[in-house]
Amino acid sequence: MKRIEAPLPLLTNDGSTRHDDRGSVGAGFLPTLGDRPLAYLLLLPSVVLILGLVVTPFFQAFWYSFTDKHTVTPDYNFIGLDNYLSFFRQPDFPEAFKNSVVWTVGSVGLELLLGLYVALVLQKHFKLRGIARAIVLFPYLIPTIVAVLVWRFMMHDLLGVVNYGLVASGIVSQPVLWFSNTDTAMMGVIIVGVWKFFPFVVIALLGILQSIPGETYEAAKVDGANMFQELWHITMPAILPVFLLTALLRTIWTWDKFDIIYLLTGGGPVNSTTTLPIFVYREAFDHWQMGRASAVAMVTFAVLLVCTLIYLQFYDRAEGATR
Image (cartoon, rainbow, N blue to C red; front, side, top):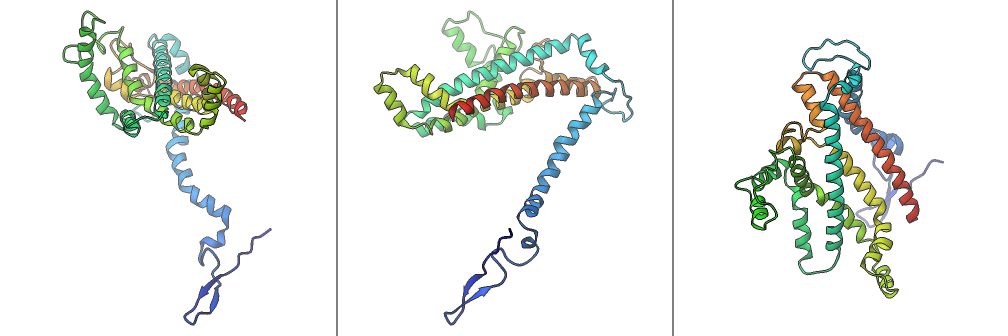
């Protein structure tokens, strides 16, 4: 059924009114389209941008993963699954996959725990709470290159304040070679990553924490619930959907993270911090094998797709439990 809009009344110089026959939107091209075609027209630039920057490169990489495409030369041949089967013959690929799992699980796990704790603290009322919230968000706002330079200096084996504090407190007997030792390089990278990105978890959880009615906690205290019982039976069920969604986003972004690891260690020492994104970079621009690099990228996409489906199952259950 077509909607009929009444003309707008206009005030004339003599005090009487007349009607504007142009309609509520105005004359011209836009009112003749209607709501739905106009919406499609406004979405068209975004659709073209997504097709050009996301969809087209994805399918191009998918096709290249079945070829012997060189990074520079335009000619290539179809080789089927050879690029995928070659992973089993490369010792660097399993190590890169393992490093990606350690980097993602370690970083996301610590970010969620630290972010939840800080969000619970900032939710309480205390003096200078606004300043404390601003300070907590500071790491997420500074550029990655700045964070890397600062942390490389702070964790320097001779001049770094971190090693000075560890030695002075007696935790270690000698300075730790954070980014030069295969045993500590991944730990150092995870520490920097957690510091840089845990404020995102704080932002996401703090918003949902503020929506929980205070009367619920007061009633729990009357019933004799302690702090941990309030956290487990009131706070966690209320924030679980947002918590899982935040975990999903941080997992995807952390698994694909390239810059922070490359700037800190370059994937070393001895491939101890080489993750799949760095492995893709080396295949494409060190070995000039765009076909193999595309195959690794497709494997990365498949892993993230499986993680997304698993997260969505938990998210649907958590969302249903809160209704």
